[in-house]
Length: 443
View 1 (tube, one colour):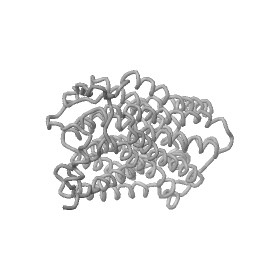
View 2: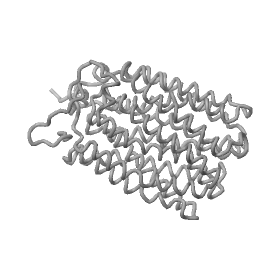
View 3: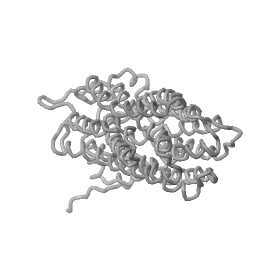
């Protein structure tokens, strides 16, 4: 009797995660691409007012991370993810109804609603990857769906100049596109998703492979309050402080390039595309690298942290982005840092599913995401006011912090969680067999 082959339905599920993440970042990056145009020609915001708009998104994102993480763990990935993208689709469309008379407040309200909905994307994705992939493939799978962030951010500077003019005419069309794509995704997700244990298109061999390096879990829910005091939760939260750097590139990168090199909407397209293509490569490379280390026999702890250290070193040169008058050197330095961040991100997300039981992953990601969003709110408030007084000084310190933050956060993560010992259903450390290093897996 021929041996049953491992089916590959998990990669179809991953394709849906990639698609949703791409739409997610198309939505959230629109404001960053259009910011100089809307600021100068349509709404005439100050830097501080633009900061308030981004802060409204980040505040909602922080609250939404906690809410959506809890909701997705409680009601499951299918329902939770559907609710998340439905909310962000509605508020994405709401942007198109903002008038000049509403000013920055109208945009801030639309961004707030968008932030609540978009906060569910990463908790849902990480939970789905934990449900559908063995540990040895999770960093790669995370890197692939996380690459959607850069595809989405790349598409907008490529697409928007096709119909949005330099004076801002037709800017509303941007939000019609993302709303339509979100509706299509909801239909596909609802028709496709089930847990692998009950999905009729998953073969026995694939299910056995998916569960090959995971401990069987009971169905009892873990209360959010029980996850909060666990030190591993806060190790992940510290790593997520670096989200503020990524948001800085996304929301303020075009303003930096406009202010320093006088780039308009069409001139911003190629530099932003280069930055996000480099970020895309970094996301996939970072996921592949730690997975490759594990397949060579490295313990998960060593593989993840070595990869994160490499990422932190790659990011460091971005501190010189303001010190050159050549726009392409600045673009390449930011692109290299963005790629390093996405490689870092692919691995810190995987830390959660490496350590926590699957049923707690969305809650932990939500808590960490809330901390990252809170750090961004503080950073953007300060940056907006500094830029109104001194653009040169503001961006110098912003890039200095952006370049050095990762090494500091990695050190703190290692001090809090030196061995990455997995936790069981009751969030107690699982004792490794004699002679085995915590975090080691058989491949």
